[in-house]
Image 1: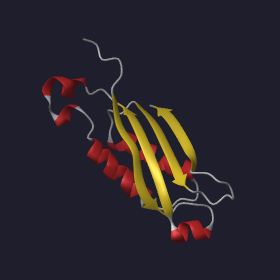
Image 2: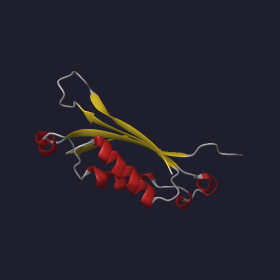
Image 3: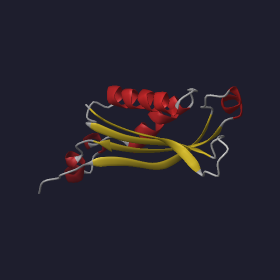
Image 4: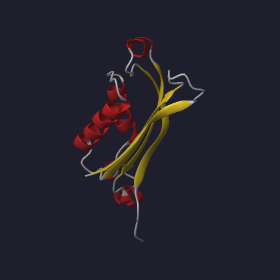
Length: 122
């Protein structure tokens, strides 16, 4: 059997963090949601039931959490930091789709969330 696509998924992780252009945003903070799709080959884990054959989503979460704890003005910059770190720490990751949204952004609109999506490949 051939595995066409292998993706480790973290879906809408909620973080309370202090990102934003305005000083008030960085001071008071807000809820952010992060979704990660990390393309990697975990066919060994499919066969062996061993964690060594994949990328641990718990480890991915911890890496993302550390970056979320460091304030950035722009979500674009934050996404760049996260993807760079994940590629450095997990060499088996071939591609990343990362979505970061901010709940109730301060822009004078009735908007549940606003954010960015970054897709990269090695």
